Image (cartoon, rainbow, N blue to C red):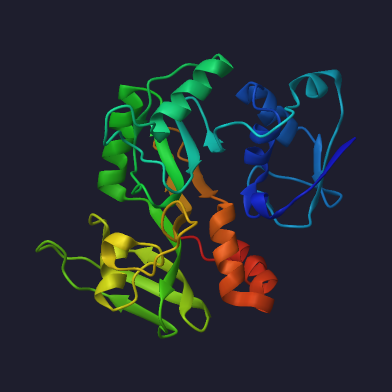
Amino acid sequence: MLTFTITESDHCRGVESFLRNLLPGAPLAYLGKLTRGGHLTVNGLPVTPDTLLVTGDTMALKESGRTRELLAAKRPSLDILFEDDRIVVVNKPPGLPVHRTAEDEQTLVDVAERFLAQRGTPAKLRPVNRLDRGTSGATILAKSATSAGMFGRFVKETGLGKLYLAVADGKLPAEGTIDTPLEGKEAQTQYRTLFQGKSAALLLVTPITGRTHQIRKHLALTGHPVRGDRRYRGAPLAAYPGHCLHAFLVSFRHPVSGEEIVIHAPLPAALLEEVRLLSGDFYSRILLSLPSLPVT
């Protein structure tokens, strides 16, 4: 058996996503076979495709010539959270734009297309949901124009379930709803304070509507901007590549299979460090609370 101890970089990662990073060249069908065929255990127990990994878990994979051949020496350049024939959901790092905004600028789409081509499964990718450059987390990319149209219509008609994590400046109430209109349109953002530090708070944020920069604008309007968000007067973070806003969870009913898909995006190392600095001795307790956050 091959055994792996789960670290913070994979905290709240789905087991199939862990396998994709472990065996990046493996066909999707092979990964599904490993997950569903009893070849995997976590802490000695069988897994299901929606099993979430937490720091300290021990995952065991039945060893074979095929798995040894596919085993990667290092993490791939693209962090894939979910993939099927129509879409790939990736964990976007902070500071990387989804679309090109300047000449010769590398984008998430560029990185993803290059990875898929090197893997032998090239695709022309089109974003279904879009995160700001500084925001990290789950981003859906369609593998064809047909899939982009299908998922685009689906999102417009039914929406996506979304949960964000944010570090916001100042002291905030235990929970709240911000409903200030943005650009003359109705907008609503709900939040819950997961931890209150001396100068900032860790928030669970649910955008009910989907206006441009909605979470960032709404928090700034309350006097509690996202930390590191220079555009909206957040406290600067010299070493952080973006701002402390992370698309932690996205959920939807697949328009083709009808399956309910729930995808978690592990926090980037820089945001984990900000949470550690904010919460001190409560850090481990906060991490353990993340898998139990509600699915919208």
